[in-house]
Amino acid sequence: MSTNTCPNCGATSPADYKFCGSCGTKLEGGVSVPGAGGGMGVGKTMYFGAMQAQGRAKLVLIKGDGMDGISYQLAGTEHVAGRSEGAILFSEDPFLSPKHANFSYRDGLLYVQDLGSTNGVFKRIREPVEFDSGTLFLVGEQLLQVEACAPDLGPQMDADGTCFYASPKRPARMQLVQRLRGGDVGMVFRSRTDTLTIGREGNDVNFPDDPFISGHHAKVMSTTGARFQLSDMGSKNGTFIRIGHEEQLAHGDYVFLGQQLLRVETT
Image: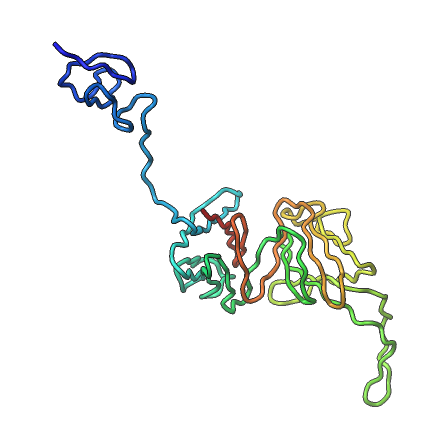
């Protein structure tokens, strides 16, 4: 009786066997077929699942405990996110506009565009970024704004020549303004130097009751004219700056919409 020897495990099987009786490798004239059996040295079976298109991105929702939540595949050309309009919906987020932002591709690159939302789109900074006076940024739960300070021109007269009495201004290059819910102004801090640090303790401005702010979180520097530079000081939760009309996104970027924190992942 003729037999075939399995080149995978060395076991012999009758010549009319199509598979090795020991390891299951497919036999064809005594030769194993790669990928056909279950033994060592042959091709492995791939897991079947939803595939992310090459060169495309997905948005991963970060849950409150810092773990990854649901993901949104950006497989089309445009992907609108909002509270009630678009493909990516967060219907229970009252801080999102009905149509808030659009994630789109142009020349193979991913961009996020603010669609005129009330509360804006914020992007986590990777490196120091320059911005204009009045730009909003997020540190922990604090919505902050840096403004250039006007020089003290001395007592100012009204129409009938009377000077308004007030405390004199101290020299300052910039002031940090805390924006409260409802649009109210909270704390205002005027910096006498060109550098202003923000954190939970031991800084120029401290927010000791904010659990999402690191000890030393962010730094603002005055550069030229009404321009400033914002830096993250290695904080745990990052520093987010409000984008203008549109901003390019890359793998690993974080975007904040309403109360939703999203991470960008690209193939």
